Amino acid sequence: MTTLDELLHLHGRLTTVHVERWVARGLLRPSGPAESWSFEQIDVARARLLAELIDEMGFDDESVETVVDLVDQVNTLRRQLDLLGHAIAEQPAATREAIAAALAKLGGR
Image 1: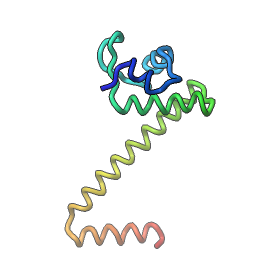
Image 2: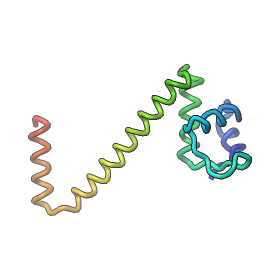
Image 3: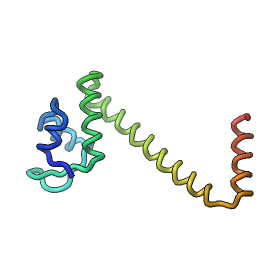
């Protein structure tokens, strides 16, 4: 877990105002009361992304929310595809081969 002070230190351009605004908008989800927030690694990474989008790319708050929503959707899809891949890997060889053949056919290969 990362404290607010540690988060601000990690990302030198961030201010408490930035973080409070992002928490209020639901873009960061710290645990604990506001006086002693703790941030998971995902929020530390997300804060870096938010800072880059705003400071380096010039996105406004509304655009940042859209980008973060899309990033979250992509990450969800990645997790689902990873689970699907593991589920397929646990199937008998004949089933895996049939899935591979169907994918090849659908992909035009």
